[in-house]
Image (cartoon, rainbow, N blue to C red; front, side, top):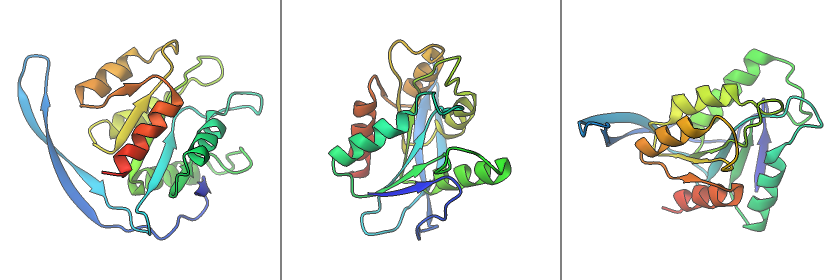
Length: 182
């Protein structure tokens, strides 16, 4: 498994873009065709996962991505994992950080949203925006603990766009790996 932290150079990924379509059905049963770009990731396994979700703001705050990396290693995930935090945990150039995150999300084969929201330590406000940007794409998986606050709307919108919502980090990771094996 290759781990790439925020602002580090990405591996040589393809910039090929395809367009996929799906039908969105609203609450009244009206159907709408929706298209969105799908980035095709190159490389030996064509596997790259972006770990989207709230980031710790202080060293003592939960860093769920460490658990995610442990699970990915246990599952012997052979691809690339993008971590939207600098290796040292300190964002030195905010604009560079945002640009890196947007580029790597767009270049990832799957975006894994794990949202263990805690309003004091992991509020996830940027995560809300990122989720809103990507929810119409097929290449996302979504999960959050059942007791995490303020995720009901995200779950409802994810379901409305055809995404299952997983209730553990491991289930969310397994869904991402399953997506990559299609």
